[in-house]
Image (cartoon, rainbow over all chains, first blue to last red; front, side):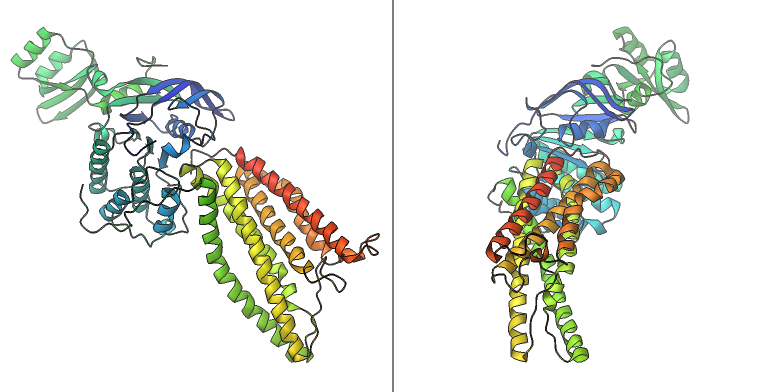
Length: 303
Length: 252
């Protein structure tokens, strides 16, 4: 393994994870392409953290196989140094300084970059002499990000790691993530509720719902499954009549509606004539629609 | 992205060592920091008790330092519980296996137990010398092996068995709570039992145990040391078995 690795792929084969009576993951089969940023989306309790913990060898699945770069990660001396699972709460030595924590992690990670760690500490204004146990939620999140990015692990899983950050820090994180990913391509799984913010980052999307995979496909294909229509309210309503409307927003006399399904060439011409703008479907709207508990049937994607 | 100030951390990447040695070194450094607090406080307490006993009794004919073994044992026991409770999650999250955690922890624990035992032995010897200058005796009580008939080297053996058992017992207690939560309380008689038994035996030196009174001192040291070492190995093995299979929650 080298610092310039293009990342490791992931394959789950019929994975089930139970906690007593609770089924956190239910017969999940899934592939994550190496060298991509995959958005892992799902409501609370959908199984996102459990999936990450299996990839990082925090536990073994109740049933099925988890493969990281072709091998099971549990107690695998080759694989585990290349898997970095960072959670918002942080798995760090709370009573030791940042400097000590970095020494602990960097000694175990062959791809760790002290240079990037130093830059990120400066970016998030973290004092290396301070102890994580005394940090605010935002600073804890920031330190998790420092560890997650500076590790440059071939498989990096960032589980809601940036939720504690304020907006400027989150956007600084997105920029840092993209910049380092471009310079050092690897596989990144980014779990977040802030879908609107991470939408521009992700190349693939996995949507989990109640332990099952609803959707697993590339973001462009997913966005092409619908269209957003923006324009005068009356014209929009006329255009979407008879279509599956996922979401509607109104501002004064202007309406934006998100509809599911493709749009024929004739419809595109008609939309232009009516003064409507057509755009890609926001992932947020698709996500809310797909994970709506009122929906009777599941759609698309791998199971 | 650019940094507005110089990086706060050195940019030179360290040479990668084996995970086991890496863990042992990091835990060893942490133990050294704690020892730097423990021993000055322990020596101050030793001096205070000795002076108090001298003022009250007029002379001090027993080793106060050896009585301090109780504090040492429970300090190491608590320290080991903290290690077992803290490190597994951090260790696996840092990209290392439970195997290297077990090996590194036992390596650091062994070194820590040995170091504390040797330091305590040194303190006892210095104390004995000081007592000699004052014209006092320095009888050893609450020890199994290092009585009047035992050779001098019995004391470090006696002490190291106790420190190692205190640490491994702490590791075992800590890891059982990590594994089974509050239910681990039910296992305390098994997990802490060996340490309590050894401490209880300390009140009745091994030479007083029926059937062992006529055993030669050197053989007695070997016998009791061997039994103690076996106990340490059994407790350490139990810790290793549980730690190697420890699942870590996805929740913090």
